[in-house]
Amino acid sequence: MDFDLKEEAEVKDFLEKLGIEYRFGCYNEGKPEVCHLLGDYLESVKKDYEKAAKVYKANCEEQKHAKSCYKFGTYTFLGKGNVKEDQLKAFDYFAKGCEYGNSDACLKAGLMCVTNSTKNKKEKDIKQGLKLLEQSCKGRNAFACFYVSGMYLSGVQGSSNAEELPKDMKMAHYYAEEACKLGSPHACANVSQMYRKGDGVPKDEMKADQFKKIALEMQEEVLKARQLNFQEGIPSVESPKN
Image (tube, rainbow, N blue to C red):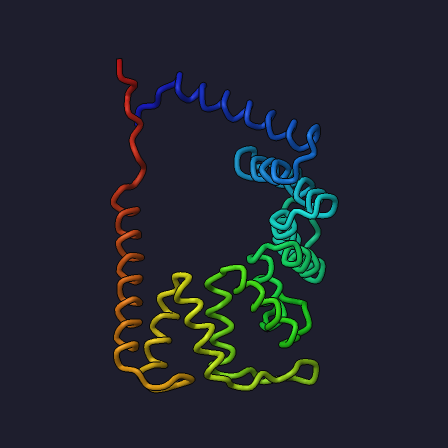
């Protein structure tokens, strides 16, 4: 593959200037959103995960930037960027990110409360987890809405340290429809079945067909996007026109 050396040099120069701009905006002007961009720059462009982690951490703790709390929570959960792996500490940062308004942080914190895994050290707490996941759903996170729907659909068996969540088909339908509105084809398919069977809602064949059609259309769009990306491959660099 041919490369335009001049263009490569220009890109490199642009990225260096971008780094300078982000550092100025963060350290001199104290802009939280720019500090987060600096963290992303250090992570994605410079591949300096240790410095990125420090920026995310400071921006979360000092500026209360929701997305930076989420990012540092992820670093802490994975032990990335020379940060000590600590799932309980990661949960605290996800919870902060959720409190400050990041739906992804609410999702991660919520999932840590309701799931069992060898990596997850958080004590199971269905009530807290449900609250966090519902908050994520309110923040327009489709997966969170779908997950909450699933919890109500089957109910959640409690343990000695967690409250049992009873099966509730009306709530399952509500959250499935919310997830469908946000683009989840699986949720739309579930809504279709609920109308077909009369689970949580009155039977309605017309609405069942309507949501089935929406689910199939969404699924088709996903497949088309995947095929398009596969066929495009790596785009070629056009020669500059005179």
